[in-house]
Image 1: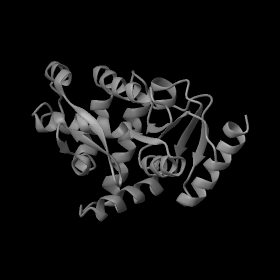
Image 2: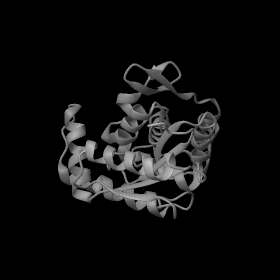
Image 3: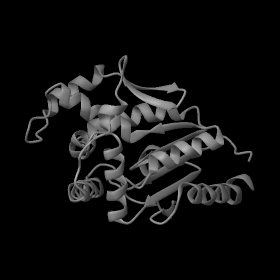
Image 4: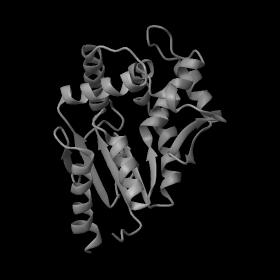
Amino acid sequence: MNVPDIIIAIDGYSSTGKSSFAKLLASRLGFLYLDSGALYRGVTLFAVESGLIDADGRIALPALKDALSSLDLHFVSEADGSKLYMGGRCIEKEIRSLAISDKVSPVSALPFVREYVDGILREAGRRRRIVMDGRDIGTTVFPDAELKIFMTADPMVRAERRAAELRAKGDEVEIGEVLRNLQERDRIDSSREVSPLTQAPDAIVLDNSNMTFEDQMDWILDILQKRICSK
């Protein structure tokens, strides 16, 4: 399929498989994949390791805002895909832990954090031919993206997927704890004042509750053929 130089924005709820879907799609199309959620997790990890989030979840706002000016988060293309680095250190494993998941939504709701992340994403988007996933890619970061997808799935299905992912990494988790974490993240993401999680008016909904990755690939490739490549 000969796909033109476009931006594909994939938004939606956590644990709907946005990242896995976006990575596979980018690989199929020969596009660059960027994970905006990884950047928010990277900022959260930095804040935790720097002592800027206390045990009760309180964030040292002025200190974190000042620290972002020198924080170096960037993606590095490796054989198995792009990885997020903090300076010279790969932080892919640390940012996927439940401990970071519990803290990322309040951090990502901060306007100055969103401004920091959006700057990184927009700079990367200048090259186009990218697939990017997150919560506000099609509404705030790239509102003019040529193709926008909004992903959703049944909450329990999402919780089961997330629990399986964490257990595969050796983490012992309870499904109830994971479900509560997802529901709280949904609440925070959808109600924040700056760039809340919402479906763009021109986004196409993908409910993948009962779909395999191949089902999803067939669906998106059909969309691309009919809406993009046939123009």
